Image (cartoon, rainbow, N blue to C red; front, side):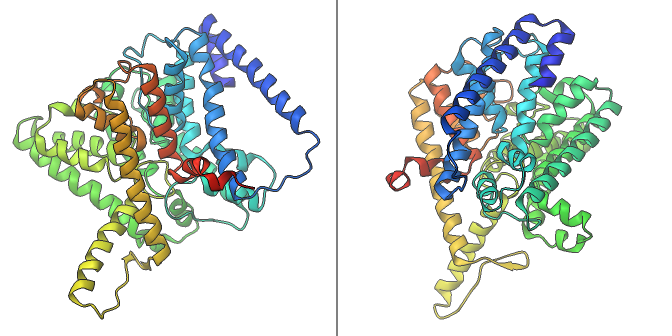
Length: 464
């Protein structure tokens, strides 16, 4: 909170400054209490259950403290709204309860965007990168927080891996900030947009999101970096290490780029044919941006796609159930799981035709093991069930069915924008407080890949 505190001083935002100072005091008292309680504990070994509990509680507690400045400054009406907003920030969802954004103190908006950036690579991954080597415990913590069915360990030491990932993340962030500055954005605007882009998040300091800037150059830069954020960061390390051929052979990356490219072109043709925009290239500019925003689960907008023809809207809706790559900053089901499920279906068809045949599910150059296939199938089933249960709970608010369905899955997939009342021009302000807590849980469960959170509700977890 040091940077937004300095901004509050610079801009003379007294109430915001008071909010940050109160938070410092609360964190100090809480930390001191934990230190006193555990000062005589000599057991620093973490088992699997400790890892899940540590990661889940870290995200919950970090959000609880980080929401304090929003309430104390008077920027948010109640703590439920503030907690929802910060959980949306840390989980890189980008959903908001703010009907009016630009009227808030700049330091509060900066902190709001900064939570996006911190959550993009992971709070615990940063924790592991900054602490001395944690060995097996560090590996366990990063594994509990990481996204996707595969978690590449780039180096023998997990601390080094975490440091490499954060270094790549920071360098990309610096590059995007510089390019956005060339596009006419102020340093404040460039940094906050970069925070949300590289985290595949979606918070913006402008009411109309990226559409405020009305710049093809800015749209292109943000589109490129959204796609970068949605790819597996381990591939960038491989590319830097000189293994470019293995990067291009990565089956998930090729599927990710292929899905985005094909759907963007089809959407552009439809938009151009229906006269939504002037010509194919302008249509491609808007369709490529919006499709990148949804598939990477960023949640930026340059247009009100609710007014688009049915075909490009349906394609956007389908992308809600895809998500970014494993090991990326993006949320959702993940491309590798979607591709694997599709190939499992084809293999099952072949198996029925040739009962005695032996078939393998292959993604790229790799054959997927049976235990991973089972894990992917289980995840998909639990993901859909969670989204449906969330939609049922949200329906108690009285919202229409599309709004309920969209709200649940955009929170679970950490996407931020959806359809109907929670579309690109909507927000979550109309929901009662208890619905915001439901949505906060969905965002946390989606960001930590369901089972890290759900394990805490198991009787087995709490048995000695």
